[in-house]
Length: 263
Image 1 (cartoon, one colour):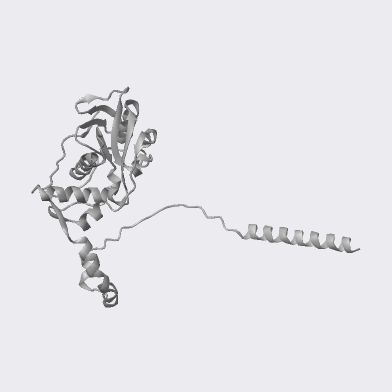
Image 2 (cartoon, rainbow, N blue to C red):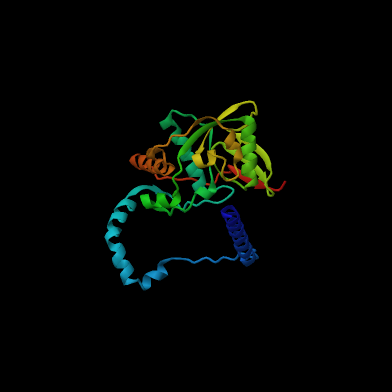
């Protein structure tokens, strides 16, 4: 008798759970995205006209410390430097900085790549502060060296062409069509030798194949240091400080590293 009662209880519990599950399913609302819209809110000096007293009082204790970290001047640039596809003064500068850092790591890369999406601000003519460099390179990207076969270098250049251009170092010449096809590729004036191995310097983010540059995933002999001093932002800072010590005002121009032409 007890066995029959227990079986009855188990069946009733089971049926109860089924009813609850069905009820939940019948009440579930299925949403479908029909559109996406966005707007841009510009936060600029217009808001300084009516500062919020409570907010200002809250941040005041931190202002001095932040200013002491961000306002020191580390260098000078000769003119306004910005990033833009297919080529720009700032992307040219940053790739050349990666190249110059090679000697610090006993590396001798043949070219460098810096993604345009990783350049988040421009540099105004004149003094460059630590805060300016943080604005330009806010991410915790590290420098990375790797070797690509000539075949993979061509694949990488085709991916760069498809994206309409990325930062490449002095000595690289790419000609691409308006629809993103690679028409010509030279390194130091010579065509890419598909049987040769090329040493490349880039960001660890790109070395992982991000930003559609998947050819990097085929890299071998990867040297990817992880110390704080290996942060690209710190390497940029060191470059400016070294230029200042030598009395050099930093300058870069668009020089035809990447050209878009009619096919």
